[in-house]
Length: 376
Image (cartoon, rainbow, N blue to C red; front, side):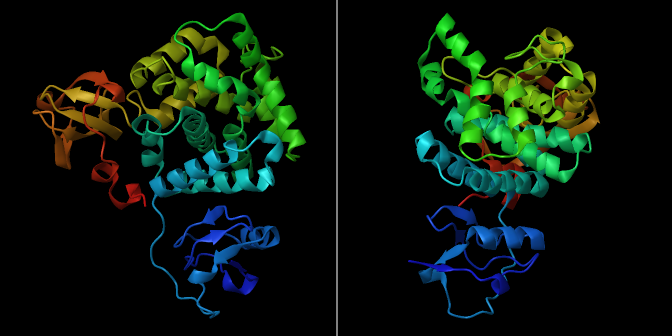
């Protein structure tokens, strides 16, 4: 049994003393999370917000909680919730718009709580099924690009929502793609080219009424030079949100393992984007990608001349000498404490970039980012 939460039990900026759910049991907000506006509270109450009876105290004056979920907890919650949506048959999905908005809020909260950790998760977290991981990765990067371009907050939320649902038109194809061990046949290529338009149609059928959202899904594979699909539109005819999602989609796919295809080095992925797809990308948006990620994207794994393995955590003394923390020692064992390495010094210079599938031990995110990387 669940107890409905009343409007007077919520206030802006006050951490929740319990987990909050929809009427059908989907987790919306975690204990300790805050709600950032009166409008958001009104929306939650209108849609129906509940807590488990065993969490209710029977009092109206719930005590405040001093802690908030960390960025990685928000991402983990988003992954679980999106997996729950995608596990259903499309025709059985109810309240899709509200559910995606809640997942979007989790992504936005993660990016606000710790932008660098959120970006690093694109490369460092590879333990979630690709159909769930990839749209959340794209949402994180697209939102970061949108913020770098100073787009307004409502548009940023729409971009995140569109990124999360960009591949709903190819759910039937995704499982086949995971199993293929070679080039795609013409039938699968045709289905892939159809998925943006089909996805927008499905979203509209499922109750998505935001035309900007639908346009972004429909156009996220269009290219600035007109070489994209499904319609081949070009330039300013492509919604800026679709352009951001399309660029994030390309990069995130390249640095993540997918079926038979191993992940590429992030530095190689950036170089290939500019060499192979430069004309197809709006130059202003392409510039924002470098500003957000750097020449060594955040989360990149590097081998130092010391034989240690480290993670790029941000900019350093120069574009080719990023901030790095060593996580694996010379012996190949994980370090108890990640250690800062000044890569502009010859004794700690970067020797090579490696991909996460080459690591023999998992990356301990808390050793890099502390409590912001804690996940329950």
